[in-house]
Length: 264
Image (tube, rainbow, N blue to C red):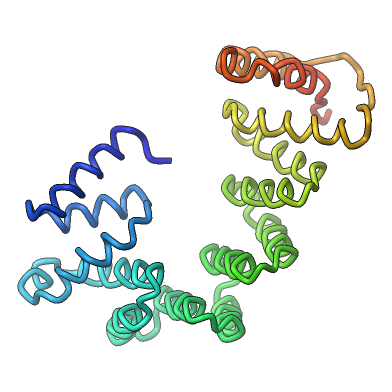
């Protein structure tokens, strides 16, 4: 997540570049550093550098990083011809690169050639079954086609290998919530709470799932009232954080946390 200071810096630099004040390369570097998607701006300012031989020559090895960045931005903007030109330039420079292979698969996605993209990704995974980027691309591809069950299957397989990926757990939880599969979503939030116990939003989302499960089942099963110091600390931390914003959820949240049991 981008902080307020970083976002202000990015916006200030973007306005500077848009108004002809220079700093296009610095702006593109900051976009990459913060991992934000401002595709139209990246495409515009990135192409202005790539199309200028003098500016491009000053980049040294970073030229190829810019080709990749512009290719992704072009695909976001559905400028597939520009993306193809950038990927071809990278292919000539790095003919055996798996990273370039991923870009070629993404280009197939941008064209809607789902089967060809799946074939390309499967081929790359044969060489490196633990490639996280490709695994996530398959999830994104399933979602883009409206194949939610396929996305769930891909995410579950991915999490069997990369169990510490918080973003994947959150994405899977959100899909389950959208399908009203609250028990499965609650399990995902339990994993997130175990990994990041001091993130209040996960606790609140877990409380929402618990409320939904209780409403659907018309009552919860009573658990033992024993609670550990961990759950007490978590409840107090959340109560302080959300005392003003989430008063209606705190009683259920506190009760849920106290009823949780850690495996012995």
